[in-house]
Image (cartoon, rainbow, N blue to C red):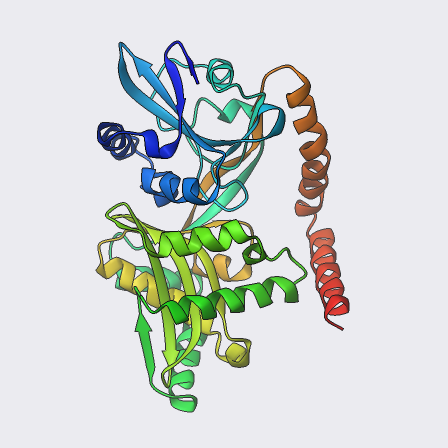
Length: 361
């Protein structure tokens, strides 16, 4: 498809020059170098999601920007890997004169939905329906500086976690941490833990969706400077007790799928794992760990700051836009209502766990 200065291609149709420009634009954007926004992530999604597209914006015959997306029924578009990706949006020069309506028309989209839109995305932020915080760990000044911050803002948390780490080593066996584990058995173990965790808490098992499981395996083999699949594992007596799979660039570790063996829950191995990940990331020159949006007690304890992400949809008038509104907006408003009322949110979490217990019995 093409419309004037915008063409829609499959990821594999992008040339080497397009990919180099994409990377240059990310370098110049001033935003954290989140690997979800790199062309390699789009390539991996394209291999498991056949409706993956990239809108290429041209000026004077030369490519100047990109919008990775997926196209659904009635032209309903979504950000790449919607529901899974933790950072989304267009890759354009700052202040580039382009309107969302023009881009949607050129892509034959009635809507473009996003749930983790990157900050400073002027093209789509006006269409946001909700704003969220994504929690981050800043290790730009090194791991020791991060521990100093923790001692000031969460001294009990740090002291308790480090004590549990020592106890785990004494009572279970020698600890070993691997920042970039390549053993496929460890990845399978993590996915099994995570699936069980989803079911235990009454949430949808992401790995039960074939495309997500395939995507993780695709990314586990991706080894590019700005998008490398990274499996980190904490072992005790040679046995994995906690693990995490995410993506890293030269400066950002995007935290994605953490889990642990419930048998060792009393040692808080997941928290220990995150401290060791922060230490290893800092040693590798990575300055930021992005824990993603969504409130969680462990994030409150580990974080040093927050980034803003947005949820919503840009739309064009028509049947497709109306269908999007009817399918998404009522649920979003209900979720937003509950999220802003802690008692309701706590009750909802208890209900989900109760339903999960009933399903298992």
